[in-house]
Image 1 (cartoon, helix red, strand yellow):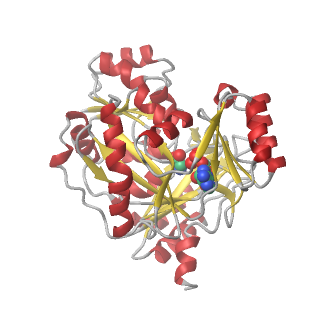
Image 2 (cartoon, helix red, strand yellow):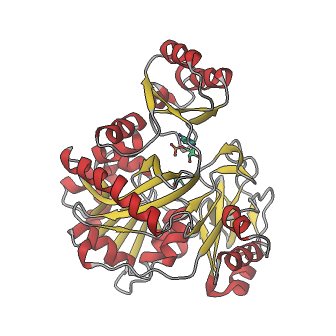
Amino acid sequence: MRVMVVGSGGREHCIAWKVAQNPEVEEIFCVPGNGGMGLIGTCIPLSSFEEMLDFIEERNVDLILVGPEAPLAAGIVDYLCAKKRAVIGPDRRGALLESSKVFAKEFMKRYGIPTAPFSVFDNPGEALEALKKRREFPVVIKADGLAAGKGVYIAQDFEEASFAVQELMVEKKFGPSGERIVVENFLEGEEATVMVLFDGQSYLFLPSSQDHKKIGEGDIGPNTGGMGAYSPAPVVDDVVLKRIEKEILVPLFEGIERENLYYRGILYLGLMIGKDRTPLVLEFNVRLGDPEAQVVLPRVQNDWLEVNLAIWEGKLHKIRLQVSEKPMLGVVLASQGYPGHFERGKRIEGLENFANASGDQVLLFHAGTVRKDNSWYTDGGRVLNVCAFGKDLEEAYHKAYEAISYIRFEGMYYRRDIGFRVLQRKGPS
Ligand code: AMP
Ligand code: GLY
């Protein structure tokens, strides 16, 4: 078996690591991959779908796993399926659930999926007019299109709201993504991530998790791609999970079927669990979360190649997911300045000591790294993910942070409070 993993982040390193555990996997091609993925497979920069197809045909690649949203939104599944290649993910129309917030919100409305009430604007004057009349603040303003997790503004008053409209619609900070915006009510509660495997007929829940989107400790400052995560998220207990299934998944699958969306892949539900424990959808993603995958996949005991082949063949009903009882917590080590401007090329030290000292309960996934002459250097905003199992979350927390103490690079930044919601609830250890 030859597998291609598309992407270059911590999530993709984790996917490649997981797939590599199957002894039948002879080769993994990472497109373009990163330093860590280069230890598992062959990294190759292929820039167009045509180039990818040529490579896939030449090397007899059997299965293609796509990490990030951009190639899905650009139609990689449409292209490769038309060429009879096994690829996991939705087609371009299915990917609209993530790539267009307007599409996703209107879809939710059509099928009665609980989400924040909203309006859509394609004209800044009309948006400002409506915001001026608004009584309820904060208000949430979102770019319609993909903006790497940064196109969402939480405005405390009209002034902040008009700043968001100005940046998105007038200055076009995120290009065409801001041509339309969604204005929605601010939801109170606790966020959680629930990812679901779906083969077009059957589905399986992956273990729940919680991301930490803000750059600063205590959840302050600008949004990032995610600064750390843990799994499971206690806020998603059995009662909440049943409600997610009944109130969100059932109508979501009905909508996918009725609108004839091609979907064999992962559905990511970004949820707000309200005080009354009502789950509401903040967003859909059409792929694994990053950094959620890095704490969810290691807990899944099943062979990841088999699971993905079952998705492709429509045989997910034959799979029973086995999930480790042990929770896992992962911390992102980032470059100074991220999510704003940051520098690359800082030498990373301590990875050998880390590997020797940490044992098999601590995993290291690379995101923005590159290897040159046997040394490691930073090559992105999010650089590394240090993930640890524990008998409970507290132990996982201590193991992860102890392991981090071995690693150093200039300007290394990380949040020290990953898991704080659960650990605070339990009180200090
Ligand atoms: P999204 O990309 O839509 O998930 O938004 C990014 C982040 O903004 C979410 O993870 C939340 O932290 C926050 N957010 C988005 N929509 C809302 C909302 N309606 N109420 C409160 N926070 C929100
Ligand atoms: N961690 C959030 C995301 O992957 O979109």
